Amino acid sequence: MSARDRLIAGVLEEVAAREAVLSFQDVKARSRDTTPARDGLSALLRTGCSVIAEIKRAMNGRVLLDADAPIAHLARDFEEGGAHLIACQTERLRFQGSLQDMRDAREAVELPMFCRDIILDPYQIHEARCYGADLVPLQVELLDQNRLVSLLDRIESLGMTAVLEVRSPAEADRAMEAGARVVAVNARPLVGGDVDRKLFAEIAPGLPESTVRIALSGVHSPRDLLYYAAAGADAVVVGEELMTAEDPRRLTRTLVATGQHPSCPSR
Image (cartoon, rainbow, N blue to C red):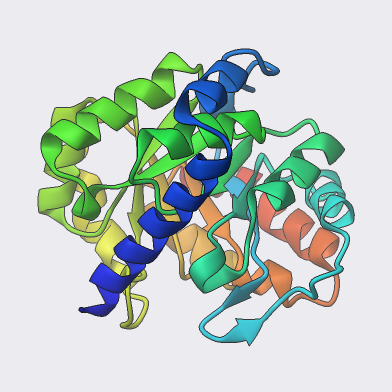
């Protein structure tokens, strides 16, 4: 099996294990009886380039956050630093994340919560809503078109915002055909490889003007944020840099100020 196939198999295996404990019908009922989703789309449409601060425990074999780290405290740091949204890596296989991390973060702040995970099954969408997700991603490269449309519709039926992640112009075209309102261009390959920030500038011009555009990966400084904003980004996700910062709140504030400065390109 390729690394990609192992990832897919691992995700589906974990979903099946959770569904054996809580049935699809039960998680579906719970998801429709939970607190309404927060408006993530409006948060992305503010003037300037919005900052999505991301919580992630690990990446590329590096531990970024101790097992007993106070997720709520970190989320509040991001909110007090002015972040427009908070993302949380809930994938366990590569990032040691959990849905509980997202719930802890959401309960600590008023900001919309962007669930970062590999979503392949409807069960995961209802599950994410139960734990407080307001935005949910779909990896276009992993889903055939019918599945993509079906999962997008399910996300929106629960009042959440679907974020379609793409890594090529062809995937962006498929996202548009599926009815995406929010597209995230991920500069990092799904499995292996290096970050390629130029991907955003290659893909974004082909998206309709009405499409909300998020740049994923490659933001380490205000200069990187401005680079993406100049290429048409409405928002950037910043994870690793914030997780390793000595003062996450201060860095968040610096990035937010850059994105809201009058000189920052904006739609």
